Structures are given as structure tokens and as C-alpha cells.
Length: 405
Ligand code: UDP
Image (tube, rainbow, N blue to C red):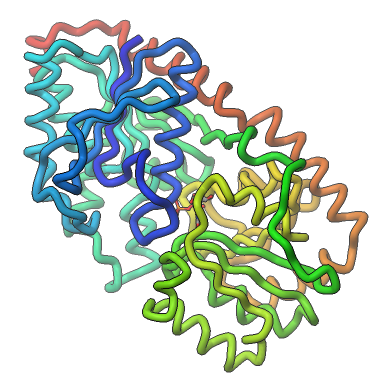
């Protein structure tokens, strides 16, 4: 099957850990590779954000990345990309109508990609599948007036959910959010993301650490909602443990980064500055070494549409303490593969970390059960098979372009 994946701001070729580059980039890259592994012909369309990029880039995994000219060939924050989605959609429609490759199905990632893809799909008869990855209503609830999403996002997301042929949801929480938004449950298919089990495995090298000290690790983009502040505030209740914070700008740019500086000041005021180590962005290939160096991964976001880092840690055999939110509430089984704590509650987090660090037997049991869960439920192959079935179901509808224009 010919599959187009549209990921307007999140290129599978991007460097991760920076403000707008995180789980979606990884998801799109690994899903594309897994679909190729299932025998599909896959192209990923992402916005050209540098004049130096070639029109198309073949990847070692077998899919092609096409750079779409829409808006300036510069890095533009994702919250400023909406005005360029019309151009993105027209370009896709032109390619699929007049070019030499028309997909059987187009899978859009994030709501803005959904707008461009629906525009193109309507004009070419290509069915459209949508994964939101994150929802404006949730972001608004948590960030209030600090939410920089374009006005109208929530309305667009509602309309997209009703217009797309299928909506892929990644966790139970997302189903509830979309039902409240007015998206029909019958349009949704629950297909959780996979995790790369070659890259994230229990055996393999680990970055050096102080053997005399327990180590916790927390990973993600340096944005407030990832809850790094809550992890720092929890540390005084966890005697002796060091905490590696992985993500954000590259290490050499950390001193100039406002968020990193605020985190450093907070660590000082909590009396734990000597135990908090800001690592900065780590290349994805090295993430396994970081997870394996830790006794526990702490994922303390305020909300989390899915959350790849708990899955990656579980795949490395590292027990997880996570906020009981979004996808983490599905991936971590409380008391069996890890512990769930309320979000934004440093006291509860500190207690959970202290208890788990003091209990080696429980850490071992969690790690074993977590690995089992990853292998049986979160392989990319399983994800690609399930999506393949969704794609087949929508593309056999076979509507001629004229019927849907
Ligand atoms: N990541 C990375 N280097 C870093 C920080 C993060 O490669 O320095 C990766 C991490 O391994 C994971 C992704 O970025 O694959 C973050 O995904 P998640 O779903 O946890 O968060 P998001 O960024 O989508 O909010």
C-alpha cells in the first residue's frame, strides 16, 4: 500500500530534545520505518525549514522524506505555522493529482497537518487518517493564557475529528477528551505508539555514574508542563539520590537557557543543587545509555498526550514512577510495572521515589513486568499491523475524487 505521512512541524530527520522536537518526530520516524517493514511504500511530508534541504531525502530505513515548500524556508515555531497550512495542502494536492505518486491513504500527525491533509484528500479522493498527538483543549486547560496555540485550534480539532475518515487515539484518556469535544467514538481506533526495542533494551552500555549514589533520571523537552520543577522539589525528600535531567538545548547552550537557569535556581533554593545534573540534549542513539544508568525513571508531567520516555525506560528494564495522566496512566500499571502518582504533587512524588529506591526487590519485579508488557503490547510491528488494518479499511471505501470534492 502507498502511505503518505504528513508531519508539518515534526520532521523525522530533526534533532530531538529542543522545544518543538520531541515525541512526534520519533513517532513518525519509527512508524514510517515499521510500515516499510510491513511491505508498504511510505513517504513522509514535512515542511521545508531550511533552504539547504533537498526536495526529497531517502532514508536508510526505506521511506522517503519530502520537504514541502510552505511558508519561509526557516525554522518557524509551530504555533506560527497555521497561516502556511493552506499552501501546504495545495502543494500536496498538486503532487497527488499531477505527480507520479498518489497515496492510497494519507495519515496526518497533529491538527495542522490534518488541515493540510484534509484539503488535499478532499481534492484527490485520498482517504485521511489523523493522529492528534496533543489536544488544544487539554493544553488550554493546563496552560490557560500562556497557551500560545493559534486561536481557533479547538474548533479546528473538532471539525477535523468529524471530517477525517478515522482518528487514531493513543490512550484511553484521549478517547474521553475527544468524545467531550464531539468526535464520534465510531471514528476512533485505539492504536498506542510502539517503542524501538533494538535501541531501547536492558542489555548494553550505560553512561558512568557514581556507584555510591542512587540515580534517578527524568527526560524531555525543557518546557514547564514536563514537571522537572516538581522532580527538583521532590528531591529533598529523597536523601542522597542524584537526578539527571536529560533534554533541552545542547549542553553548551544550557547556561543561556532561561528555563534551565530557573531550574538551577530552584535546585539551589531547595538545597539540592549538588544533586541535580542538567545534561542537555542527548542524541537519540545515546538515550539507552542514559536510561540504563538509572535506578528509576521519573516522568512527572502535568499532562502527557502519550509519553514515549516511560516506554523507552521500561524497554531498558528501568522501573518508572509516572504522573497518573494521559498515556502514562495506560502504559504504567500501578503496583505492577511501576508507580503512578498525582501530577504536580512533589510530596507524593518524593515519597514514591524514596520508597522505590529503598526496595530493590520491587524495582526488579517492576522492571521484569515492564519488559514483559513492552514486548507483548508496544512493539512497532504490532502498531504497524494495527494501523495497516485501519488504512485498509478506509481505503477500500474507494470513493472517486468527484464524489468527495
Ligand atoms: N529525546 C532525545 N534526546 C533528548 C531528550 C528526549 O532523544 O535529549 C527523545 C526521547 O527519547 C523521546 C522523545 O525525545 O523519544 C520525547 O518524547 P515524549 O513523548 O516523552 O515527549 P514529547 O516531546 O513528545 O512531549
